[in-house]
Length: 228
Image (tube, rainbow, N blue to C red; front, side, top):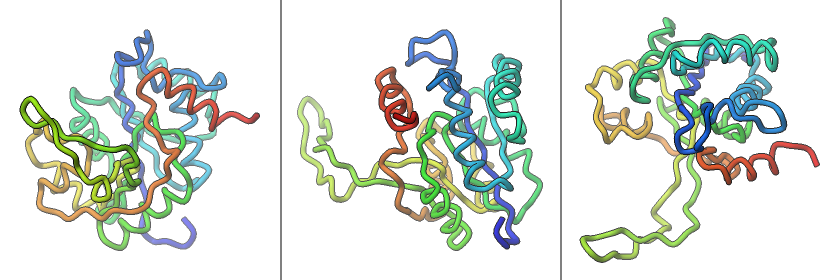
C-alpha cells in the first residue's frame, strides 16, 4: 500500500435482485462487453491497489453463481464473499463483522458503480485517513424543485451535491455508527454516520461514476467502459 501502515478495506455492496432492471438476474451480474458489472467494479479497485482487502456482500441465493462467474472472469482478484441482510444497512454491518483491524480505513462501494476513477478512490481513502470520513460528490447540474403540498418551489442547486461511492471512514467511526438501530432514513453510509453524531467530509467525485440502476444506464456504461 505504497508505504502506508494503515490497512485499507473495501466492502462492495452487491445485494440487488434485478427488480428495477426488470431482469431475471441481479443488475450486478448483467454483462457489459460480456463481463458482469461487478467484475468491472472489482477490476477498477484491484488495478488501483492490489493490496486493498475486498469484501463482497450479496444475497445468499446468488453466492454460488457469483463464485462461478468470479472464477471465470477474475480468478486473480482475491476477495471474501459474505451473505448480506434484508437492508443495505444489514449488509454493510455483515461486511464490517469480517474486519478485525480496528485501525483500518474502510470504503463502502455500490457494486454497480464500475466507472469510479482511481483519482476518486485515492481522494476518498486519503481524506478518510486524515479526517475519519470522506464521501465523493459532484455538483448538481439540473434545475431542482421541491414538492410542497400540491405545489413546488425552486431550490438553489449551487448548495446541492449528488453523492457517490466509495464512502470511506475509519473503522472506529463505522463500528460506533452501525451499533444504531436501522432507520428508513439510512439511505447510505454517510447518513448512518451522521445520525451517530459524526461529521462527514465531502471530496470531489468523478461525474462518470454513475450508479447503474435502469436499462439506459447500461448503454452509458458501455460507451465509457468498452474500447471503440
